[in-house]
Image (cartoon, rainbow, N blue to C red; front, side, top):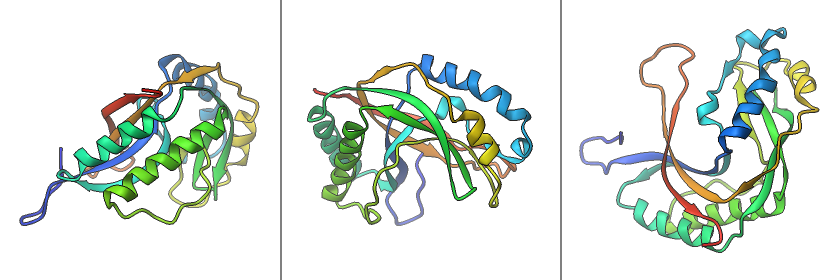
Length: 198
């Protein structure tokens, strides 16, 4: 569903990502299960495994008339990037507000793909924040305030997921929660996907 106001073009909230395969999601889900019993875990907003992803570039609200050019440039970025090995590995947190699982494997290629996904947006004319070094991560939970996530990070620090091949660049539509129900999670829908290496 697109958002629009009278007199303004319809937009979609989009981002580019690499999606883990079902087997990788399942093993991470199993590893996370014991964490839910740790102190502070029930107070977190846990993300849905169906929506787990490694964000490459966040585009925000993209006008529908701009999307075809963005998609064409993302297809080019995917074609220029070879498939690479990846696995979910370890954990960390951002300022006590987000718990995440990290990645290992072809991180140089993952970062290159992220750079190309950002460049695609800039060349399309989308405003992008100033680039920071890409930290590959898969967000697992968020806190409304600063929380002590160190016990959760420590519990997941030794996690080593199975190796898989990242072979697609996916454009994802993020649907913010609209019901007003506290704790409701946004939904993510894959819009298009392009094979890496063409």
